[in-house]
Length: 367
Image (cartoon, rainbow, N blue to C red; front, side):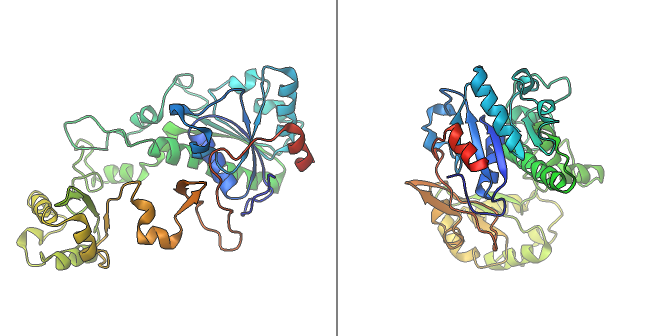
């Protein structure tokens, strides 16, 4: 029932059902074979009016509904956590303690427990009790400021940078590292992952470039990785589509120029020099053909090129099809588990409603 294949097969995880990065971390663990039991509140539903099956962060694991205000259900939650190697929660600081489920409650009964905590602002600091979302956590990290063209507000880059990369993936990394240490030493620990910290870490390259004088923090949209370089950006094509180019290295830049007939154009003689003439020249160039025509010309050239695809188009791209990047689960197309494990491959994912389990079934499996 709870068994899944993958390199984490047998790892017992209790997830306190929530939103965003903590469920994403639990999804990754389940994708890699962990036995994840998701403790949900009575009546808990996804955001945006979704059906549970479309809430794909919750895929590949069973849900157990417990009312933690009920003494018997609270005891059941404690029993499960005492049998787990990992617990994951994404509540504000202090909520789990008020329930009697904080990490100190298990120090004696389950000393190996890895206690993964996911918040927006962290377990400490003046903002720790404030509400927020991905956009806010990015805002204080320097990451949001660096995105988008000058003289306009930064655009919301979906929930990818702070919520998932800086949040869920940082929690996943910390939980796996702490689990390795607990198995070696017999001592668990708390993993404090927060999205504002993680979003800042995603900017480590840019902070280094800024310190070294290779990045001008006053120029939004004016640096090499955020739109300032003509050779690292997206362009509009004749049919209203878009293409991306990113030949940062000189040999790839030369390959692009050769493929599009600009190898002898003096405006492109100094790749890292003045971009003011290169940019409009490339705009005019790419506007002269459709996106698919450019794909036919550049896909097989080492020019760091790719068409910009919609979510409807991406699953049908030949490379994604060859890789099996997307899978179909009961009519729902979704990205498959990554990374790939050659020796211990992961099972295909379920949709976001893998089904419910009762307490006795979990105990039978975990005893």
